[in-house]
Image (cartoon, rainbow, N blue to C red; front, top):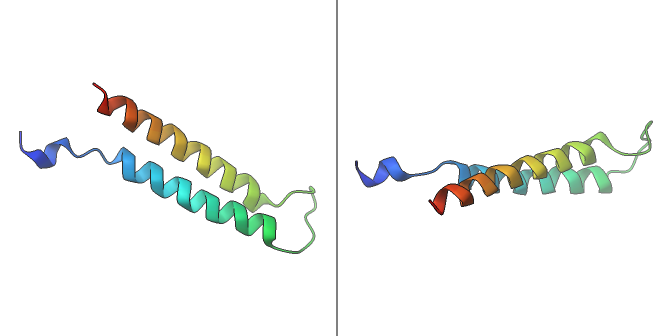
Length: 66
């Protein structure tokens, strides 16, 4: 197999989701306005994106150890 076949897309994908999730979460916290539930939905989805990015990054890290 060539070296390109060993590229694992999970590492950059996990980092991307963590970065974008942090941006969305910060935007949700800092955006003024009325939030009917008491918390901005952007904050919740930012947290979900961060969690997903952490799981994908952990899977990439685990696969690298094999």
